[in-house]
Length: 240
Image (tube, rainbow, N blue to C red; front, top):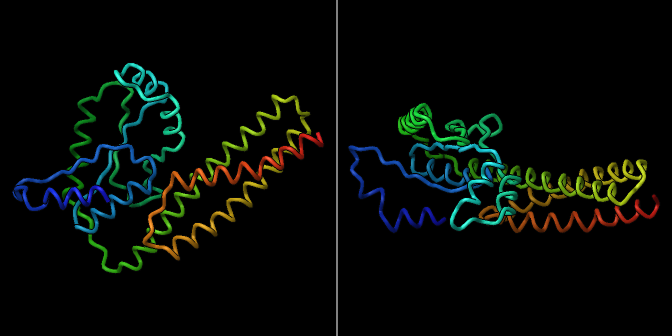
């Protein structure tokens, strides 16, 4: 990992004054929870604290702020990021308990700063315990990775189903044809995701050390589902 390489190159752990707490701030999107989990596992490996801050902001505000930048990124980038973003969920992911969500629609208030300081203090006072049984941890990591992949794949397939039904509606398909198409596509999605789950679990079991390229995998998933759904769309539009 780049962070691990940077830590070794700069010898951060050997140069700071141990009488003062050291806080390493990673300022990035980390939009998949699996990305954040990698950092949490790195913190656990070295027995240090871990916490995360999620700056929540409505999409329309993000778009407005981006357009005012001297070098704005395309709107599509923000739209895709919003669609893929997995906010911290301490119920689903217990390892995300040390999380703080701040509303950044307006300026950060003094109360937010105090909450942030409390979170940092809690993380420093409660360092993670290094894993003793690595086999169990690796198995847990594989399950988390598979869960993240399947969640994103489900979101992608849902979006494609909605787009296909909307296109049929715009194409003046009859209500019965639209209903039949939606039913067929939902059945396809269910079967498709079941197949994908088996494939993903098999991959992370056979190649546990090989990192999963989420973006590449989701592109492949999207292309495969589009091919199979296209056949169903053509059939129902012809019949309708």
